[in-house]
Amino acid sequence: MSLLRQFLFGRALATAQEKHERLPKVLALPILSSDALSSNAYATEEILLTLLLLGSIAHVYSVPISAAI
Image (cartoon, rainbow, N blue to C red; front, side, top):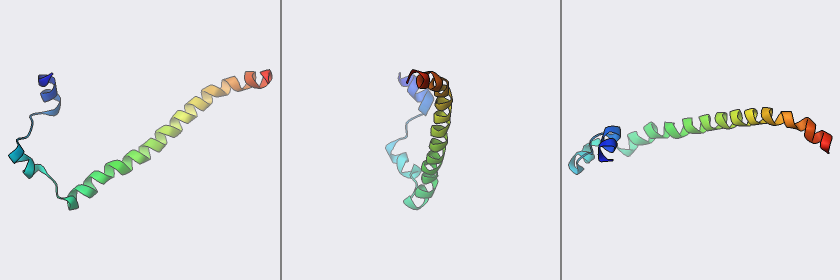
């Protein structure tokens, strides 16, 4: 499991090296906040796509259900 983890994520950073890899808050906020904004945009699109697909499938059952009522 350790080899798989190392292959997927790479070698762990030493504690002394971590300090040099950090971004200051002034840079981290604009860089990382774009991920949240794009996720919200894509989530809405995917929800609408799923509703459209399921709605078109459910449309087939609307006539038999209406006839039964």
